[in-house]
Image 1 (cartoon, rainbow, N blue to C red):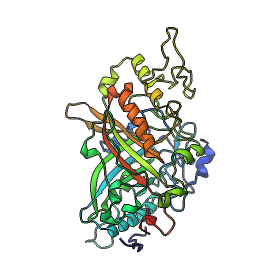
Image 2 (cartoon, rainbow, N blue to C red; image 1 turned 180 degrees about the vertical axis):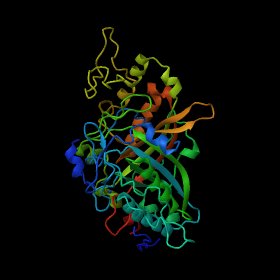
Image 3 (cartoon, one colour; image 1 turned 60 degrees about the horizontal axis):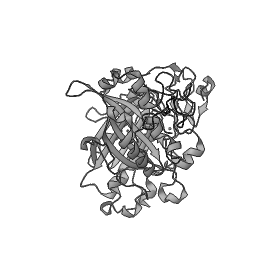
Image 4 (cartoon, rainbow, N blue to C red; image 1 turned 120 degrees about the vertical axis):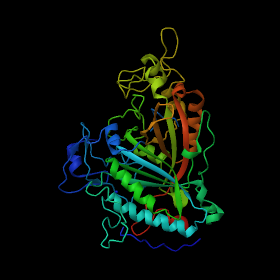
Length: 445
Protein backbone atom coordinates (compact mmCIF):
# COMPACT_ATOMS: atom_id res chain seq x y z
CA UNK A 1 0.00 0.00 0.00
CA UNK A 2 1.22 3.45 -0.75
CA UNK A 3 0.03 6.90 0.12
CA UNK A 4 1.47 8.41 -3.03
CA UNK A 5 -0.97 10.27 -5.20
CA UNK A 6 -0.99 8.48 -8.54
CA UNK A 7 -0.22 10.37 -11.69
CA UNK A 8 -3.26 11.25 -13.73
CA UNK A 9 -2.58 10.63 -17.37
CA UNK A 10 -5.47 12.51 -18.94
CA UNK A 11 -6.41 16.16 -19.03
CA UNK A 12 -8.82 15.00 -17.95
CA UNK A 13 -21.17 17.71 -12.95
CA UNK A 14 -39.63 22.65 -9.03
CA UNK A 15 -40.00 23.07 -12.52
CA UNK A 16 -39.98 26.38 -14.36
CA UNK A 17 -38.69 27.49 -17.68
CA UNK A 18 -36.61 30.07 -15.83
CA UNK A 19 -34.74 27.31 -14.04
CA UNK A 20 -33.67 25.97 -17.40
CA UNK A 21 -31.76 29.05 -18.29
CA UNK A 22 -29.98 29.59 -15.02
CA UNK A 23 -28.54 27.11 -12.57
CA UNK A 24 -30.55 24.43 -10.87
CA UNK A 25 -29.28 22.73 -7.75
CA UNK A 26 -25.73 23.48 -8.79
CA UNK A 27 -26.35 22.22 -12.30
CA UNK A 28 -25.37 24.61 -15.03
CA UNK A 29 -26.65 25.14 -18.51
CA UNK A 30 -24.19 26.25 -21.14
CA UNK A 31 -24.84 29.75 -22.59
CA UNK A 32 -26.77 29.85 -25.81
CA UNK A 33 -28.31 26.42 -25.39
CA UNK A 34 -31.83 25.72 -26.53
CA UNK A 35 -34.24 23.47 -24.64
CA UNK A 36 -35.70 20.55 -26.51
CA UNK A 37 -38.94 19.00 -25.40
CA UNK A 38 -39.14 15.39 -24.35
CA UNK A 39 -36.48 14.26 -26.77
CA UNK A 40 -36.04 10.79 -25.45
CA UNK A 41 -39.15 9.94 -23.52
CA UNK A 42 -39.81 6.27 -22.82
CA UNK A 43 -38.48 3.15 -24.45
CA UNK A 44 -38.03 4.67 -27.85
CA UNK A 45 -34.70 6.27 -27.09
CA UNK A 46 -33.21 3.06 -25.78
CA UNK A 47 -34.55 1.04 -28.65
CA UNK A 48 -33.17 3.51 -31.14
CA UNK A 49 -29.83 3.20 -29.41
CA UNK A 50 -29.80 -0.44 -30.37
CA UNK A 51 -28.96 -1.73 -26.91
CA UNK A 52 -31.04 -4.50 -25.44
CA UNK A 53 -30.64 -3.98 -22.41
CA UNK A 54 -35.36 -4.75 -6.59
CA UNK A 55 -35.98 -3.68 -1.35
CA UNK A 56 -38.40 -4.45 -3.63
CA UNK A 57 -39.55 -1.02 -4.05
CA UNK A 58 -41.45 -1.14 -7.22
CA UNK A 59 -43.46 1.68 -5.77
CA UNK A 60 -42.82 3.46 -2.63
CA UNK A 61 -39.65 4.63 -0.90
CA UNK A 62 -37.85 7.68 -0.80
CA UNK A 63 -32.80 15.02 -3.63
CA UNK A 64 -30.40 18.18 -4.03
CA UNK A 65 -32.45 20.13 -6.53
CA UNK A 66 -32.80 18.84 -10.06
CA UNK A 67 -29.99 19.32 -12.57
CA UNK A 68 -32.13 18.17 -15.43
CA UNK A 69 -34.13 21.25 -16.20
CA UNK A 70 -37.78 20.31 -16.38
CA UNK A 71 -41.03 22.16 -16.45
CA UNK A 72 -44.61 21.08 -16.21
CA UNK A 73 -44.30 19.57 -19.70
CA UNK A 74 -41.00 17.89 -18.91
CA UNK A 75 -38.48 19.76 -21.04
CA UNK A 76 -35.09 18.13 -21.47
CA UNK A 77 -32.06 20.37 -21.81
CA UNK A 78 -29.09 18.41 -23.09
CA UNK A 79 -26.68 21.25 -22.27
CA UNK A 80 -26.96 21.01 -18.50
CA UNK A 81 -23.85 20.05 -16.51
CA UNK A 82 -23.78 18.74 -12.94
CA UNK A 83 -21.00 19.76 -10.48
CA UNK A 84 -18.47 17.06 -9.69
CA UNK A 85 -15.53 18.30 -7.58
CA UNK A 86 -15.74 19.88 -4.11
CA UNK A 87 -19.37 18.95 -3.46
CA UNK A 88 -20.70 17.92 -0.06
CA UNK A 89 -21.87 14.61 -1.54
CA UNK A 90 -21.12 12.49 -4.63
CA UNK A 91 -22.97 13.35 -7.83
CA UNK A 92 -25.67 11.02 -9.08
CA UNK A 93 -27.32 10.26 -5.74
CA UNK A 94 -29.39 13.28 -4.77
CA UNK A 95 -29.22 14.52 -8.34
CA UNK A 96 -32.73 14.31 -9.77
CA UNK A 97 -32.88 11.13 -11.85
CA UNK A 98 -31.96 11.58 -15.49
CA UNK A 99 -33.79 9.57 -18.14
CA UNK A 100 -31.24 6.82 -18.79
CA UNK A 101 -28.61 4.85 -16.99
CA UNK A 102 -25.85 2.41 -17.86
CA UNK A 103 -24.69 0.39 -14.88
CA UNK A 104 -21.59 -1.82 -14.83
CA UNK A 105 -19.63 -3.72 -12.19
CA UNK A 106 -16.04 -4.97 -12.31
CA UNK A 107 -13.85 -7.53 -10.57
CA UNK A 108 -10.25 -6.63 -9.76
CA UNK A 109 -7.72 -8.82 -11.52
CA UNK A 110 -5.93 -11.40 -9.39
CA UNK A 111 -2.67 -9.61 -10.17
CA UNK A 112 -3.93 -6.13 -9.27
CA UNK A 113 -1.99 -4.29 -6.59
CA UNK A 114 -3.11 -1.50 -4.29
CA UNK A 115 -1.38 1.05 -6.45
CA UNK A 116 -3.18 -0.27 -9.52
CA UNK A 117 -6.48 0.42 -7.74
CA UNK A 118 -5.32 3.91 -6.83
CA UNK A 119 -4.28 4.68 -10.37
CA UNK A 120 -7.57 3.38 -11.74
CA UNK A 121 -9.62 5.54 -9.34
CA UNK A 122 -7.48 8.54 -10.23
CA UNK A 123 -7.91 7.95 -13.95
CA UNK A 124 -11.65 7.41 -13.53
CA UNK A 125 -11.89 10.64 -11.55
CA UNK A 126 -10.13 12.67 -14.20
CA UNK A 127 -12.16 11.03 -16.95
CA UNK A 128 -15.49 11.51 -15.18
CA UNK A 129 -14.72 15.20 -14.65
CA UNK A 130 -14.17 15.63 -18.38
CA UNK A 131 -17.17 13.57 -19.40
CA UNK A 132 -19.56 15.40 -17.07
CA UNK A 133 -18.56 18.64 -18.78
CA UNK A 134 -19.52 17.15 -22.13
CA UNK A 135 -15.87 16.82 -23.12
CA UNK A 136 -13.98 13.88 -24.55
CA UNK A 137 -11.32 12.21 -22.43
CA UNK A 138 -8.66 12.47 -25.08
CA UNK A 139 -8.07 12.43 -28.80
CA UNK A 140 -10.93 11.06 -30.89
CA UNK A 141 -8.87 11.44 -34.04
CA UNK A 142 -5.16 11.16 -33.21
CA UNK A 143 -2.64 13.02 -35.35
CA UNK A 144 -0.57 9.92 -36.04
CA UNK A 145 -2.29 7.41 -38.34
CA UNK A 146 -0.93 4.48 -36.34
CA UNK A 147 -2.21 5.85 -33.01
CA UNK A 148 -5.25 4.46 -31.17
CA UNK A 149 -7.91 6.99 -30.19
CA UNK A 150 -8.12 7.75 -26.47
CA UNK A 151 -11.82 8.60 -26.69
CA UNK A 152 -14.21 6.44 -28.70
CA UNK A 153 -16.00 9.52 -30.03
CA UNK A 154 -19.66 8.49 -30.12
CA UNK A 155 -20.71 11.35 -27.79
CA UNK A 156 -19.05 14.09 -29.84
CA UNK A 157 -21.47 16.96 -30.26
CA UNK A 158 -24.15 15.50 -28.01
CA UNK A 159 -23.59 17.79 -25.00
CA UNK A 160 -23.23 16.87 -21.32
CA UNK A 161 -26.91 15.87 -20.99
CA UNK A 162 -26.75 16.15 -17.18
CA UNK A 163 -24.35 13.21 -17.09
CA UNK A 164 -23.32 11.94 -13.67
CA UNK A 165 -21.07 8.98 -12.94
CA UNK A 166 -21.19 7.48 -9.46
CA UNK A 167 -18.39 5.14 -8.34
CA UNK A 168 -18.91 2.28 -5.87
CA UNK A 169 -16.39 0.16 -3.94
CA UNK A 170 -17.40 -3.42 -3.17
CA UNK A 171 -16.62 -5.43 -0.03
CA UNK A 172 -13.94 -7.39 -1.89
CA UNK A 173 -11.41 -4.56 -1.99
CA UNK A 174 -11.36 -4.07 1.79
CA UNK A 175 -9.01 -6.96 2.45
CA UNK A 176 -5.46 -7.53 3.61
CA UNK A 177 -4.56 -8.26 -0.01
CA UNK A 178 -4.79 -4.56 -0.71
CA UNK A 179 -3.86 -3.41 2.78
CA UNK A 180 -7.35 -1.96 3.17
CA UNK A 181 -8.96 -4.31 5.68
CA UNK A 182 -8.85 -1.70 8.42
CA UNK A 183 -10.47 0.87 6.12
CA UNK A 184 -13.63 -1.14 5.47
CA UNK A 185 -16.66 1.09 5.95
CA UNK A 186 -18.32 0.09 9.20
CA UNK A 187 -21.60 -1.09 7.66
CA UNK A 188 -20.32 -2.57 4.38
CA UNK A 189 -21.04 -6.28 4.33
CA UNK A 190 -22.17 -8.67 1.64
CA UNK A 191 -25.94 -8.69 1.48
CA UNK A 192 -27.52 -11.73 3.10
CA UNK A 193 -29.69 -14.07 1.09
CA UNK A 194 -33.20 -12.69 1.15
CA UNK A 195 -36.41 -14.77 0.94
CA UNK A 196 -37.43 -15.28 -2.64
CA UNK A 197 -34.01 -14.51 -4.11
CA UNK A 198 -33.19 -16.44 -7.28
CA UNK A 199 -29.80 -14.83 -7.78
CA UNK A 200 -27.67 -15.61 -10.81
CA UNK A 201 -23.92 -15.27 -10.45
CA UNK A 202 -23.57 -13.39 -13.72
CA UNK A 203 -25.71 -10.54 -12.33
CA UNK A 204 -24.37 -10.51 -8.79
CA UNK A 205 -21.49 -8.90 -6.91
CA UNK A 206 -18.43 -6.97 -8.05
CA UNK A 207 -15.44 -5.11 -6.57
CA UNK A 208 -16.19 -1.82 -8.29
CA UNK A 209 -19.29 -0.24 -9.85
CA UNK A 210 -20.04 2.63 -12.18
CA UNK A 211 -23.51 4.14 -12.56
CA UNK A 212 -23.71 6.62 -15.42
CA UNK A 213 -26.97 8.56 -15.71
CA UNK A 214 -27.80 11.07 -18.44
CA UNK A 215 -30.69 12.49 -20.43
CA UNK A 216 -29.17 11.06 -23.63
CA UNK A 217 -28.62 7.27 -23.62
CA UNK A 218 -25.60 7.55 -25.91
CA UNK A 219 -23.91 9.98 -23.53
CA UNK A 220 -24.35 7.54 -20.65
CA UNK A 221 -23.17 4.62 -22.76
CA UNK A 222 -20.14 6.53 -24.01
CA UNK A 223 -19.12 7.34 -20.45
CA UNK A 224 -19.21 3.73 -19.30
CA UNK A 225 -17.57 2.46 -22.46
CA UNK A 226 -14.60 4.81 -22.18
CA UNK A 227 -14.21 4.38 -18.42
CA UNK A 228 -14.33 0.61 -18.89
CA UNK A 229 -11.42 0.87 -21.34
CA UNK A 230 -9.30 2.20 -18.48
CA UNK A 231 -9.56 -0.97 -16.39
CA UNK A 232 -7.48 -3.11 -18.74
CA UNK A 233 -4.94 -5.07 -16.74
CA UNK A 234 -6.48 -3.99 -13.41
CA UNK A 235 -10.03 -5.31 -13.57
CA UNK A 236 -12.56 -6.93 -15.88
CA UNK A 237 -16.26 -6.45 -16.44
CA UNK A 238 -18.61 -8.58 -14.33
CA UNK A 239 -22.13 -7.50 -15.37
CA UNK A 240 -23.92 -4.56 -16.90
CA UNK A 241 -27.47 -3.27 -17.42
CA UNK A 242 -28.79 -0.41 -19.50
CA UNK A 243 -31.82 1.29 -18.01
CA UNK A 244 -34.37 3.65 -19.48
CA UNK A 245 -37.49 5.44 -18.35
CA UNK A 246 -36.43 6.30 -14.83
CA UNK A 247 -38.58 4.38 -12.37
CA UNK A 248 -38.14 6.69 -9.39
CA UNK A 249 -39.16 10.31 -9.06
CA UNK A 250 -36.91 13.12 -7.93
CA UNK A 251 -38.17 16.40 -6.52
CA UNK A 252 -40.11 18.37 -9.08
CA UNK A 253 -40.42 15.41 -11.41
CA UNK A 254 -43.62 13.80 -12.55
CA UNK A 255 -43.88 10.36 -11.01
CA UNK A 256 -42.68 7.82 -13.60
CA UNK A 257 -44.14 4.37 -14.24
CA UNK A 258 -42.51 0.97 -14.07
CA UNK A 259 -43.03 -1.67 -16.74
CA UNK A 260 -46.07 -2.98 -14.90
CA UNK A 261 -47.75 0.33 -15.69
CA UNK A 262 -47.90 1.68 -12.13
CA UNK A 263 -46.44 4.95 -10.87
CA UNK A 264 -43.15 4.41 -9.09
CA UNK A 265 -41.56 6.58 -6.44
CA UNK A 266 -44.55 8.57 -5.22
CA UNK A 267 -43.20 8.49 -1.64
CA UNK A 268 -39.50 8.69 -2.46
CA UNK A 269 -37.20 10.80 -0.27
CA UNK A 270 -37.30 14.47 -1.28
CA UNK A 271 -36.57 16.48 1.87
CA UNK A 272 -33.06 17.49 2.94
CA UNK A 273 -33.77 16.36 6.48
CA UNK A 274 -34.57 12.87 5.23
CA UNK A 275 -31.36 12.81 3.19
CA UNK A 276 -29.38 13.66 6.30
CA UNK A 277 -31.20 11.09 8.38
CA UNK A 278 -31.40 8.19 5.93
CA UNK A 279 -28.92 8.66 3.05
CA UNK A 280 -25.73 10.54 3.92
CA UNK A 281 -22.99 9.26 6.20
CA UNK A 282 -22.00 11.69 8.93
CA UNK A 283 -18.67 12.88 10.29
CA UNK A 284 -18.31 9.73 12.34
CA UNK A 285 -17.88 7.71 9.13
CA UNK A 286 -14.21 8.73 8.79
CA UNK A 287 -12.98 8.71 5.18
CA UNK A 288 -16.54 7.90 4.03
CA UNK A 289 -18.08 11.04 5.57
CA UNK A 290 -20.48 12.56 3.07
CA UNK A 291 -20.77 9.30 1.14
CA UNK A 292 -23.40 6.60 1.26
CA UNK A 293 -24.11 2.92 0.49
CA UNK A 294 -25.50 1.71 -2.82
CA UNK A 295 -27.64 -1.42 -3.13
CA UNK A 296 -28.40 -2.77 -6.59
CA UNK A 297 -30.91 -5.47 -7.52
CA UNK A 298 -31.82 -6.77 -10.96
CA UNK A 299 -35.50 -7.72 -10.89
CA UNK A 300 -37.08 -9.68 -13.72
CA UNK A 301 -40.80 -9.23 -14.38
CA UNK A 302 -43.12 -11.84 -15.81
CA UNK A 303 -44.71 -9.20 -17.95
CA UNK A 304 -46.90 -11.38 -20.16
CA UNK A 305 -48.54 -12.98 -17.11
CA UNK A 306 -49.05 -9.61 -15.47
CA UNK A 307 -50.66 -8.20 -18.59
CA UNK A 308 -53.43 -10.79 -18.39
CA UNK A 309 -54.17 -10.14 -14.73
CA UNK A 310 -57.43 -8.33 -14.00
CA UNK A 311 -57.13 -4.70 -13.01
CA UNK A 312 -58.72 -5.20 -9.59
CA UNK A 313 -56.04 -7.74 -8.71
CA UNK A 314 -53.23 -5.51 -10.01
CA UNK A 315 -54.51 -2.62 -7.91
CA UNK A 316 -54.82 -4.82 -4.83
CA UNK A 317 -51.22 -5.98 -5.31
CA UNK A 318 -49.89 -2.43 -5.40
CA UNK A 319 -52.46 -0.92 -3.05
CA UNK A 320 -52.92 1.91 -5.54
CA UNK A 321 -55.06 2.75 -8.54
CA UNK A 322 -53.32 2.29 -11.86
CA UNK A 323 -54.02 5.53 -13.70
CA UNK A 324 -54.00 8.11 -10.90
CA UNK A 325 -51.67 6.22 -8.61
CA UNK A 326 -53.85 7.06 -5.61
CA UNK A 327 -53.79 4.80 -2.55
CA UNK A 328 -56.93 2.68 -2.46
CA UNK A 329 -58.06 4.75 0.53
CA UNK A 330 -57.66 8.06 -1.32
CA UNK A 331 -58.47 9.95 -4.47
CA UNK A 332 -55.19 11.56 -5.52
CA UNK A 333 -51.67 10.20 -5.95
CA UNK A 334 -50.16 11.99 -2.99
CA UNK A 335 -52.95 11.26 -0.53
CA UNK A 336 -51.52 9.57 2.55
CA UNK A 337 -52.51 5.88 2.63
CA UNK A 338 -54.84 4.94 5.48
CA UNK A 339 -53.69 1.45 6.36
CA UNK A 340 -56.31 1.15 9.12
CA UNK A 341 -59.30 1.80 6.85
CA UNK A 342 -61.70 -1.13 6.42
CA UNK A 343 -64.54 -2.02 4.09
CA UNK A 344 -68.16 -2.46 5.20
CA UNK A 345 -67.35 -6.14 5.64
CA UNK A 346 -64.45 -5.28 7.96
CA UNK A 347 -61.65 -6.13 5.54
CA UNK A 348 -58.66 -3.78 5.10
CA UNK A 349 -59.11 -1.47 2.09
CA UNK A 350 -55.37 -1.69 1.46
CA UNK A 351 -54.23 -5.29 1.72
CA UNK A 352 -51.58 -5.62 4.47
CA UNK A 353 -49.49 -7.66 2.02
CA UNK A 354 -49.80 -5.13 -0.79
CA UNK A 355 -46.61 -3.52 -1.99
CA UNK A 356 -47.25 -0.08 -0.53
CA UNK A 357 -48.35 -1.47 2.82
CA UNK A 358 -45.21 -3.55 3.27
CA UNK A 359 -42.86 -0.82 2.06
CA UNK A 360 -44.46 2.15 3.80
CA UNK A 361 -42.35 3.92 6.42
CA UNK A 362 -45.41 4.03 8.68
CA UNK A 363 -45.24 0.25 8.89
CA UNK A 364 -41.43 0.00 9.23
CA UNK A 365 -40.54 2.12 12.25
CA UNK A 366 -40.18 5.18 10.05
CA UNK A 367 -37.39 3.72 7.89
CA UNK A 368 -36.89 5.21 4.43
CA UNK A 369 -34.39 4.56 1.64
CA UNK A 370 -33.69 6.60 -1.49
CA UNK A 371 -34.73 4.82 -4.65
CA UNK A 372 -33.01 5.65 -7.95
CA UNK A 373 -34.22 2.87 -10.21
CA UNK A 374 -34.67 2.37 -13.94
CA UNK A 375 -36.65 0.09 -16.20
CA UNK A 376 -34.61 -2.21 -18.44
CA UNK A 377 -35.03 -4.68 -21.26
CA UNK A 378 -32.67 -7.35 -22.55
CA UNK A 379 -34.88 -8.23 -25.51
CA UNK A 380 -36.36 -11.76 -25.40
CA UNK A 381 -35.48 -14.73 -23.21
CA UNK A 382 -34.90 -18.27 -24.55
CA UNK A 383 -38.59 -19.04 -24.00
CA UNK A 384 -39.59 -16.23 -26.34
CA UNK A 385 -40.87 -14.00 -23.56
CA UNK A 386 -39.97 -10.41 -22.82
CA UNK A 387 -36.72 -10.26 -20.84
CA UNK A 388 -37.33 -7.06 -18.91
CA UNK A 389 -37.83 -5.61 -15.47
CA UNK A 390 -36.46 -3.14 -12.96
CA UNK A 391 -32.87 -2.20 -12.21
CA UNK A 392 -33.54 -1.33 -8.59
CA UNK A 393 -30.95 0.98 -7.07
CA UNK A 394 -31.20 2.44 -3.59
CA UNK A 395 -28.96 4.64 -1.48
CA UNK A 396 -28.96 4.58 2.32
CA UNK A 397 -26.58 5.28 5.20
CA UNK A 398 -27.36 1.91 6.71
CA UNK A 399 -27.72 -1.09 4.36
CA UNK A 400 -29.61 -2.88 7.12
CA UNK A 401 -32.56 -0.60 6.35
CA UNK A 402 -32.73 -2.09 2.87
CA UNK A 403 -32.28 -5.62 4.20
CA UNK A 404 -35.07 -5.21 6.75
CA UNK A 405 -37.51 -3.89 4.17
CA UNK A 406 -36.61 -6.44 1.53
CA UNK A 407 -36.82 -9.41 3.90
CA UNK A 408 -40.37 -8.34 4.67
CA UNK A 409 -41.22 -7.83 1.02
CA UNK A 410 -39.50 -11.06 0.00
CA UNK A 411 -41.69 -13.05 2.37
CA UNK A 412 -45.08 -11.45 1.94
CA UNK A 413 -45.35 -9.07 -1.03
CA UNK A 414 -48.27 -9.94 -3.31
CA UNK A 415 -46.10 -8.69 -6.15
CA UNK A 416 -43.70 -11.62 -5.75
CA UNK A 417 -45.91 -13.70 -8.03
CA UNK A 418 -44.80 -11.49 -10.92
CA UNK A 419 -41.15 -10.68 -10.16
CA UNK A 420 -37.85 -12.51 -9.58
CA UNK A 421 -34.73 -11.01 -8.00
CA UNK A 422 -31.90 -12.37 -10.15
CA UNK A 423 -29.06 -9.90 -9.44
CA UNK A 424 -27.72 -8.27 -6.30
CA UNK A 425 -24.75 -6.19 -5.14
CA UNK A 426 -23.71 -3.65 -2.55
CA UNK A 427 -21.09 -0.90 -2.74
CA UNK A 428 -19.71 1.91 -0.62
CA UNK A 429 -19.96 5.24 -2.45
CA UNK A 430 -17.13 7.59 -1.37
CA UNK A 431 -17.68 11.33 -0.95
CA UNK A 432 -17.08 13.71 -3.87
CA UNK A 433 -13.41 14.31 -4.70
CA UNK A 434 -11.64 17.60 -4.06
CA UNK A 435 -10.20 19.56 -7.00
CA UNK A 436 -6.82 18.01 -7.73
CA UNK A 437 -7.71 14.85 -5.83
CA UNK A 438 -9.45 11.63 -6.76
CA UNK A 439 -12.40 9.50 -5.65
CA UNK A 440 -11.57 7.48 -2.55
CA UNK A 441 -8.21 9.23 -2.04
CA UNK A 442 -8.69 9.39 1.72
CA UNK A 443 -8.92 5.60 1.71
CA UNK A 444 -5.22 5.37 0.88
CA UNK A 445 -3.95 8.07 3.26
